Length: 319
Image (cartoon, rainbow, N blue to C red; front, side):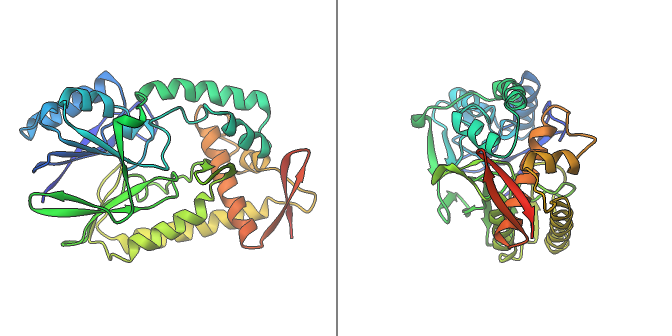
């Protein structure tokens, strides 16, 4: 089984996204890129160079449902006629925008985000959501942990690796310990734990950082020799990346805890202090809030900070 990387342009600051072609029966794409003409042309050209057309694709597998990864799924599926789309049932980005639901507003306001700021972010992500076609429930099938994707010459096992998003999935070929990880493992970036409702109880927040650390350990247990990420170059030394991630998370955790005074602070205020230079810039504000919330949730679970509800807003206090 040969996994062929294709670099697809995106309009996001993260740069190109990696799409992976598995050119054997059934011809499969892992992720597809955003819904832009540039991305569609690049994907079509990349497939053509490998002797494949959209019409040859039989399976589209999504690592997660952010627009840069899932945006072209419907277009490719429609042109391929018989292609099936698979995505974990805890994902929602292929169904509606990232901040489109009332539950998102409630979670953000609970984190101390002013309502006018939330509306600005919601409007921004409303525009971002145009980079992916919405799918109906009948348009896709569920990925589940440890299910197997069969090919003519081998199998990819599905690994549910939540953290970056609740339904993020990775795929392992155990025969040679190769992983395809989406945004769970990136060579030059520490993945951002995105603020999301808990799939099992949407009125609660998904504990993204705690889940991400479990997912990293899960991937490590396979002793991977080669890791294909959603952006950037492949990783050939997973242990080095793993240790770098743990150090970076520990350092960020200490910084976040140091920003929590005895008088109390909201997650929104921590985010402002944590990222003072980029906080007001486009999507960076939401990513900053997500990062602060994830670390405060983890710190609270570890007994490093306390949390109280005041007028419907979570206030964190130093212990």
